[in-house]
Length: 117
Image (cartoon, rainbow, N blue to C red; front, side, top):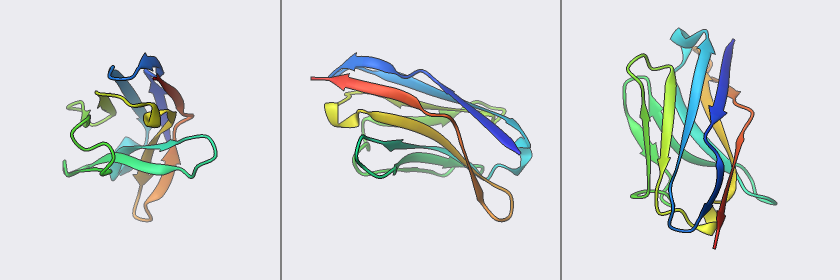
């Protein structure tokens, strides 16, 4: 079992920045990667960014150059630095971690990010 707890969401004006954090606990040695997804009202959940246990990083095209994912040395906390935010970035952001040999997905509770125009 893995528990994921997000923090750092909020309201920001367009062009501003926010930093999200996701802290993992439990069977952290089984975590294969940690990342972020988001879901806007009326839309499907979509991939934002992820970092594997080996350090490989991927971003959605829509956030490349604006968002940066990183993690602490213990690999238990992942961060999402979001710069140059746009109203279309407004969504609930969920932390995700595929765990174990079956890559079972664990999710955080979500944190709201609202970007005003």
